[in-house]
Amino acid sequence: MKVGVYVPGYEPSAGGGYTFEYDVVTSLLALMSETAHEFVFFSSASSAGSKNALAEKMSVQVISTRNATPLGVRMLRKAINGFANQIRYPGDLSYAAEKAGVDIMWFVTPSYEMVNIPFIATIWDLQHRLQPWFPEVGSVRDWYFREGYFSEFVRRASFVIAGTQAGTDEIAMFYQIPRDRIRILRHPTPSFIMKTDKAEDQRTLEKYRLSPGYLFYPAQFWPHKNHVNLLHALKILEEEFHLSRELVLVGSDKGNLEHIKQHAKMLKIEDRVRVLGFVSQEELISLYRNAIALTYASFFGPENLPPLEAFAIGCPVIAAGVNGSEEQLGDAALLVDPGKPREIAAAVKRLIDDPAMRADLISRGRSRILDRTGADFVRGVFKILDDFEEIRRNWN
Image 1 (cartoon, rainbow, N blue to C red):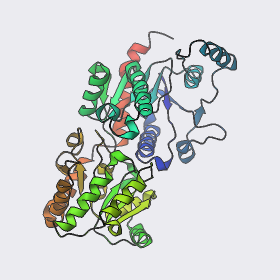
Image 2: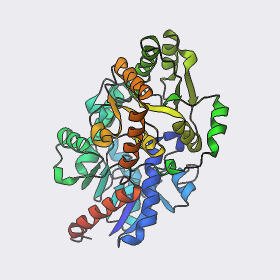
Image 3: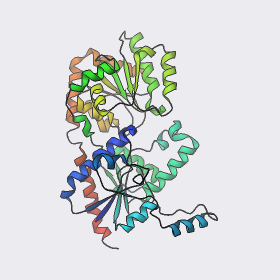
Image 4: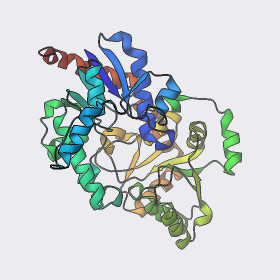
């Protein structure tokens, strides 16, 4: 079959979205010889004035979908929508894909555009259904947008890719999708983290004036990332357990950073909270390597990439025990209730007091990632395509 691959072209500042997209597409390009299927790449961000970060970095040939719909059709739709604005139409991607002779479209990430051909959907989470109180998913505008978006995306998909059994259960429950249309392909461990060069470490530590042994949390500054409860844990660690540690935070501000800074000031720990902003991948590796632990406190799941990054680099993991985390992390991390700062602080104390347990977690983490590669993920997609080919051959 001819397979369309839709790549939104996330910028590096998007964090996990960029990392996931890059690793999957890199693996696909390396493994094309293993399958008879032909792949064509599409993006709405690959035309003049709108760059595709992935295409630029990897020299991937990407077909732009901008204005692919014929002008006459666009004008007709505009006229019809003046009378009935509820009508939905396949968009530019659908026209570009059909023109290229695509048999099935694969949306590598949850970024979706309506198409009139079969497609594979990738779903990372449905947190607007599970935790609608967080403003980034639960405001009236955001909730209804997400619900309409995922309802169409998931229900119309020929196959849906989930990362865990927990994710499968959520998709089946919320959108009544037959389970045989959902395939579990685990998130690959980010490839960039496998670099072992330690030459960057000293430069990074000097640049940010850090000493090894801090707590580390790489996460964009959204409310659901739970930075505030982590601040309370830092306060408890000092007042009740008499342990003073710096907390290093990296990531892009999504509107909640000032609230976090004010909370640190209120707790009188602002001098021990280091906000570095967005950092390069090389610096990120060094920051993992010199941390006493990753404190991944996010309320959202069911899969997250930073614990896998920490496993790969040899950084012990304390993670929120949300739905799906035990399935993803197993016994290689200390799981805590993200809403209970004292529990987070106690886990940090355990790691500091018990070097043998810390070493054991590091060993278990490294074993945990051995079969979580981009190649494993892509070969899983090949299997989906092979299964669907027997059906797709029945029409032009």
